[in-house]
Amino acid sequence: MAATAVLDWLLDGDVAVQFQATRDLLQGDGDALQARIATEGDGATLLAAHHADGHWGRGFYRPKWTSSHYTLLELRNLGLDPANAVAGETVRRILRTEKREDGGLDPTVTVRGSDACVNGMALNYATYFGAPEDELASLVDFLLAGRVADGGFNCRANRVPVRHSSMHTTLSVVEGITGYERAGHRYRLDELLAARESSVEFLLRHRLFRSEHTGAVIRPEFVRLHHPTRWYYDLLRCLDSLADAGVTYDDRMSDAIDVLLSRRAPDGRWPVNRAYPGETHLPNPLPGTPHRWITLCALRVLAAYAPGRVDG
Image (cartoon, rainbow, N blue to C red; front, side):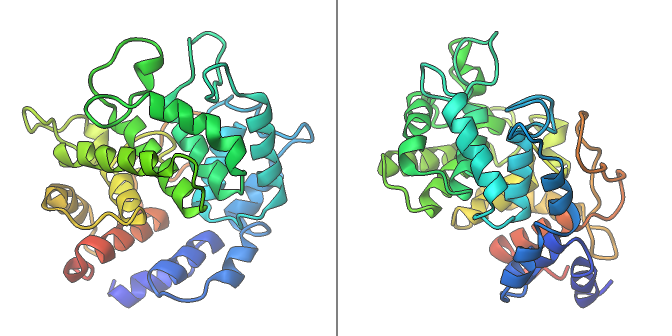
């Protein structure tokens, strides 16, 4: 496929793909498309699964991936109108009922303390769907208190002493901080931005997927392309989130960009890897098939960090 044919293929997809392709690849006005996400396609399917009790699934975090937490994250990533009443009220319900003594949101009764990965994701969708600053302050306090000495974050810090950050958790917190900044909140913002800077440096020291000490691939899944990623890390999600945060190109991204380009099929599209197991509202894509979201995100990343290589 020529580049124009790939773009036409994206614009023939779900309305959420159309919206983001129009906004990010064509720099066009996607407002009318965004307004349709609530009533058409994947967005409408997700909203229709909302229950009369005010939640999706069986509450805040169960089951994966049909709970309120992961459905809100998916709706945020689709680009649902931030003023959507169903999403906004569910966020407020979670913030009212799921906070623990440490100030974070905690989906369990068996693990001591809240989880930085969960709270990074929650900060991401809560800021997107309009949660007020005062209701987010305790999440901010919790996250900043859990910053690891190497600059990032680790979800296990609520269970055992940790010295090394997690790629998964660190990226989730980076995304949450970006959402918080974009929403215009000011509470402890300078500290959050410093935490994001050190977190980005942590990711870059690992060249986005390599051991800092041996150079080996940390986990095979880090160099595979998934959708949706949920809480899981991979290099495409990382590059896309760094671009969204306004992080400028760094030479330590080059290995990840090379891997991303190597995954492009001869027709200019990117295939998807296997989905992570769990209950879902939407059918999982067939592994190895061309995938619109993966292709859209890949083109968005290349436009930000390797514009001369967008067309091959």
